[in-house]
Image (cartoon, rainbow, N blue to C red; front, side, top):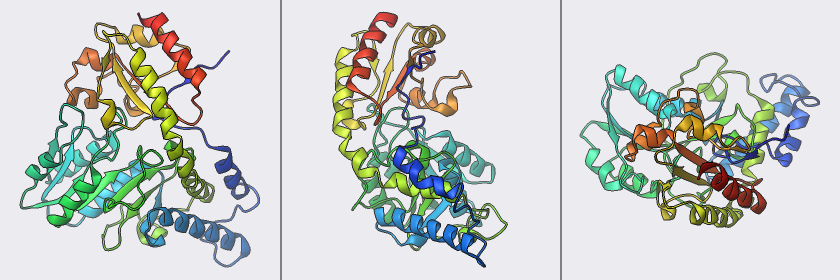
Length: 368
C-alpha cells in the first residue's frame, strides 16, 4: 500500500536522522540512570542531561537552571500555570479562546478551585489584540497565558507586546510555544516568563518537552518523588529523549531558513484554491507552514473520505476523535458545519514542490 503524502506537520514531525543519531547511544551503550551518581553509567547519563540543558538554555540566552524537562507541552502547560498559581489566594488570570486544550482544561480546573478566568476572543484576523488583553486586566490579575503561534490557524501573537504589558502590570506571562519553535525567530526577543515547548513538533522525539522558566519566577511542583529537576518535576529522567530534544534545537537555523520555501508553497496553494473555498485567516498574520481552508456546503465526513492519498487533518490532533467542531475555528466565527469541513494543511522539511503540485491537482479533482 502506498502511503499518503504527509501534510500534517503541525500534528507531529518525523524524528530527524541527526536527532536519532544523537539519541541512539543512550538506548544501548550509555543507558545509565542519571540518578546513579556512584558510577560511570550514571555519570555519563547526567553529563548528557546537563549538556542538553545548557544547549537549550543557550538558545534562549538563559541560565541552564531555567530549563525543566517534562514529558511534553501538555505537562509543561500544567506545570507552568498550576505550578505558578499553586499556594496563592485565588484571583484572576487571562487566557484566550484560541488556546490549545492543554491550556483551556487547566484554566477550567483553576476555575473549579476559585480562580476567575477571562477568555479573550480573537479579532477578525484570528489574532488576540494586545489592547483586549490590557482591557481584561483586573486588580487581582496575576497571570496571562497566550500561545505564541496557534496550532490550527498559524496566527502569531504579539508576544513581545504582551510581555511588556505583563511587566508594566507586574504580571507573569506564560506561553505555549509548541508551534513557534523553529517557525519564528525567538532569539534576542523579550520572551514570556514561562514557556512550554515540545520535542515532536520540531523533529525531535515524542514524550519530551520542557518548561522554560525565566530567572526570578517561582513555581511549585505538581509531581513528587525523587526530587529530580531540583524537585520541580520528580521522575527518572528520559536521557535519550532529552538528548533528542537538545539535538532538535540544533536544527532551528535550518528550519528558519526553510521558511521562505514553505511560504512559497503556501502561496501557491492559496492562489490555487477555488473562489467558493474559504481561506480562514490572512496570510500576512501567519507562519508559513500552516494553512486553514474551509469548504462551505461540504459534508465533513465525505470530505475526508474523498482524499485518502493525502494526510491532512481538520485541526488539532487532540480534537480528532471527538467529531466536534474546533473551538478555535468557532472562535473566529465559523459555523459548526464550516468548522468541521475545514482542512488544516501543514508543511515541513519533507514537503517537496512536487508534493504541493500533487496536492493542488488532487484537491481540485476530488473536491470540486
